[in-house]
Each structure stands twice: as C-alpha cells, then as structure tokens.
Image 1 (cartoon, rainbow, N blue to C red):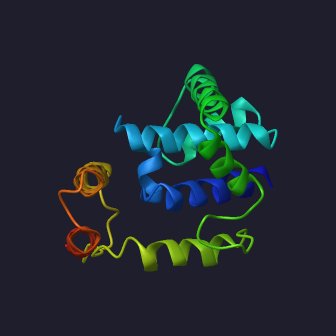
Image 2 (image 1 turned 90 degrees about the vertical axis):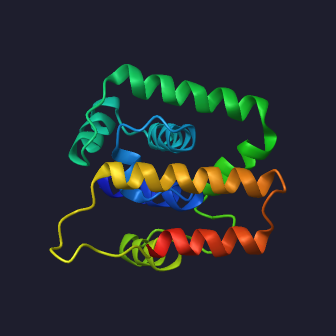
Length: 171
C-alpha cells in the first residue's frame, strides 16, 4: 500500500517537473531533478512513509540512498514552502490530488503513467527492448532544462521552444 502511494507521488512529481520517471532514480545532480526528488521525499514523509521505506523504494528503483539524503531533501522542501507561497500552493495541490493542469484526482497509476509517456516523453524505444541508460535520460533532461532557460530569457518564443522540445523528445 505505501509503495503504491510512493509510486503515485513519483509519477505526479515526474510529470509536474517534466522529468522522466526513471530520471528521479538516477544519481544526476541536475538541480531540476534534485528538486523533484526532494519533493518526492517530502510528499512521502507527509503520508507517514518511514525513512527506511523511502530508502527501500528508492533502492528498488535503482538509486540507493542514505537516510540523511532523504532528511536533507525533506528539510529543503520545508524551507522552500516557508519562503515561497506559490511553491506552497503547488505542493498543496499535489497533496490534495489535483495537478495544475486538471482538477481531477490522479490516483490510477497505469492511466497516469500511460498519459505521462504519451503526452511528454515519446522517445524511441530501443529495438532490442533494453532499458535506456540513465545517462541518456540525464543528457535529455539537461538539454530540456537549457532549452527552457532560453525560453524563459526570451531568446526562444513559446512556439520555437515547443518545436525544439518536440524534436528532442522524438529523437
């Protein structure tokens, strides 16, 4: 039961941060991914998931962690919530089961995961059905983050950003 809650939060966080699900469980230190991972820790702790369980679930997904990493992540999110009302609202919407794009509750993992990959991450699957390497996801995330930064600075229009993002995700 707690694993299902953890997995739902991981899916929601990955979608809200535009981070591939698998990337949450890599050792990347890209700030956007780290923030998403820290929010996952915070949300899990809010649902009374024990540190040892979070540690175990992370390890099951390929990222062994220490308790101190989880505690640090939870603390960082608490600080951000305290200092940023918009972020607090964002977190409260996730806790209440509502995303910023819809008012419907999201707790069907299979439907949500299908939606996540259909809408945002249509990457080519390897012919031999091997899993993509975490380095592939790290590189893709870094490119998407840089692309988003260019859009936020006004260097790229929304249309140019979407076109380039679509091209990146299809390659």
